[in-house]
Image (cartoon, rainbow, N blue to C red; front, side, top):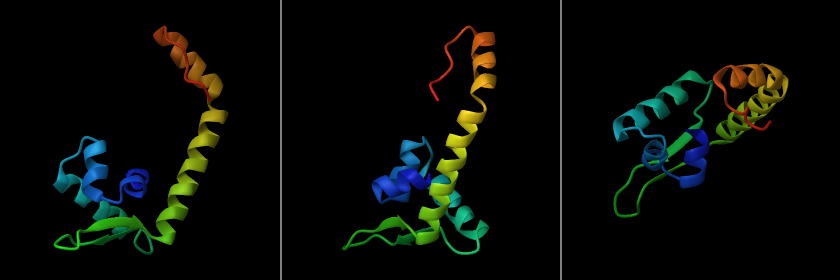
Length: 95
């Protein structure tokens, strides 16, 4: 969700990209903000000037760390992914 908020500037739009309801997207954003030592997402209410959302500095750092961990997991788990893909009769994703 953080990546989609960063791309769209909107919690609602990020939720739509993930197939979530407006309410669920906001609940997830609020939950992430409450889970970390400081908010990951700063949201401005809508209205005449429009609203929007952006990642805080901590949100950007958390997203970058998650992406790094994800890449490391893909590289480290490549052989396991090959076994699972072979068991399914499918090609493993490129890592």
